[in-house]
Image (cartoon, rainbow, N blue to C red; front, side, top):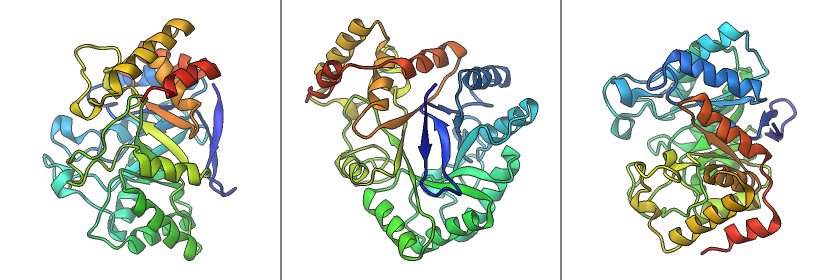
Length: 328
């Protein structure tokens, strides 16, 4: 395993593994025994960065979520896990009522919600301090100043370490960070967005925003990350739910771009040269990009996790990376 530092403040920055494990379906679609086996294997391989959210996985059983956090709490207690594993969670997209959707009934990012939801996450996880807390989705009903101040108060109190943001427009991320900087407060340092090798349209109307998809890396966010090298990019769904290798999991219309056939061909070519799988080439490409990403991978079995873990040691040559990057 390899590691990198996230965050810049010596009081809150952490060293984490370059591959993060997503626990979204742990405790629901993935049963407890399998979830424990995957977590144990991840830690055995040197993994130290686990990701969840307070609303996972509400859509599977008509709840408000929390099952993933609860399972991680039980696993942490059963294994005696303390500070050696960095746990990231999110708030803001938890449905207010069981059986509803966050799309029109989200808890949001008010000061009251941030304080209360963070406390409930700590209770479920069994952690006195959340290592990394994300604003999961935008809340345009609440002033950005209120959200920034509320997150900063938790950091000052010592109940949260690093702050992150997901599924926000680049201009809202920058505005929030500027407000925090002007007030001398901690701001977002970790950005979690969908990112993969295949290019994706971000202009199509989405469930979150009629102006397009705010949750994927587009030109604005890519440019912003290059200009702000102190920020960390965590790339969720890097393998697009198995679409690279499974015919029964097709890419959606958002990936239907002229570059797609050529990029898929380049992936297969490089995979053949390296002896790696296509999925491993995708992860290696993300790890070594001009804006290095921390791939956030899911796994429904130890075998799936092992495939992703092996990508950490895959070093693409300059020629192979040029081949992959050159397809437009």
